[in-house]
Length: 316
Image 1 (cartoon, rainbow, N blue to C red):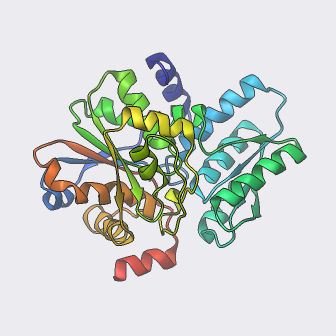
Image 2 (cartoon, rainbow, N blue to C red; image 1 turned 180 degrees about the vertical axis):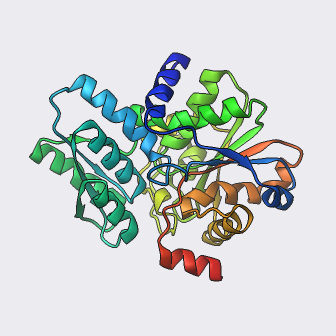
């Protein structure tokens, strides 16, 4: 975990590239939920997702430790890779990103446009991750994991912005991929001395972190979800430890609930959301009776949904 001074330093670093993203109360959404609701718009970044924050902090940390570094490599389903590619290019480093076969073509194109060398390997994220680690060793590249203290510290800056803008926030719903977002939320809350309840949201079809929270230790699980940013098969032990200590609970949402939340966000706020980006709202909708009379927030963590899927969701 990090101190308030660490958090402030990370926020200052991120702010050089990214102005604070907005948190907005949308009247139609509040009428639907029945309580004050803030949406933290991490879809309003240069890559359309919060991952740029961790990328910037990681590259800064890497160059302080290894000033002679030439390049980095990562595995991703999309948003992490975009954050790595943009931050690496900005730092003067090369970037290689490994994605599984059949990955979102628009995310692939975005990573390439940001300067990444794109490699397709594996049937899912975990196989891409293992291959990227091997390439790092064989090609002399610095491996950028999908969960790392620097990534978590970068991610914590969006929760810092939200908690400072809404000091009396009762509860915050955060989607869980590999854990940097929710661990960053817990870090920011604790560093700021707030009492905000943190609720993690996993896809029911990618339940590794929900199962891990229940068991109190890492539990792996297969994935089959439209929320590719949450499609993690192997839980990170460090993330599990932080979540078990700092989150109130981890709930799961169905594919239909994710799709419905994507549609609601577009209808009520006119914002596009990918599956992972809509999952926090899906969790709040599931628990809205429990949250009545409380001030709550959801993280719209990303907007990078491909045209075909989003068209299907809106037409459903």
